[in-house]
Length: 166
Image (cartoon, rainbow, N blue to C red):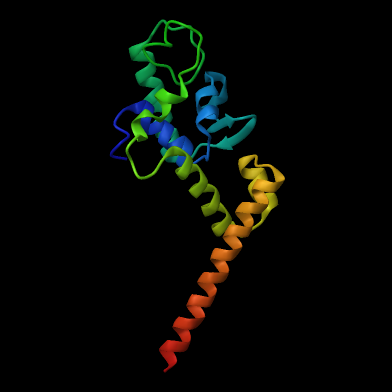
């Protein structure tokens, strides 16, 4: 998390890498999307559990936000100096700024998270669609990519076993 040096940047990174949220979805989040008591976060209409890391980063951000802009009327989760005195959301440009120049972009982290889910839980497009709110074609594409990777790993493992017996 070397690029994520602020509470906002750390939260954005977690939302992309853990919850597979797109930049526009992150920017659109409002305070009502966060339910700390029940450890839930609603992203693009889908409620998701908040794990320990995301919960910690969310609390850090909300505490910072309250200290920095105690009188703001902006209901967006992520605000900055330009948006704190308005009701506008933070720009995609501001949200992605901490990751610029890094090898991993927020989009790449988001995609990697979806593929990881497919590798861990099996290449099931229905599961991927449910967890991430993916469309049918996108879920099938991730499931197929996971299936290919799993098949390659199995072949490689079988090759290792054959070489070990020699």
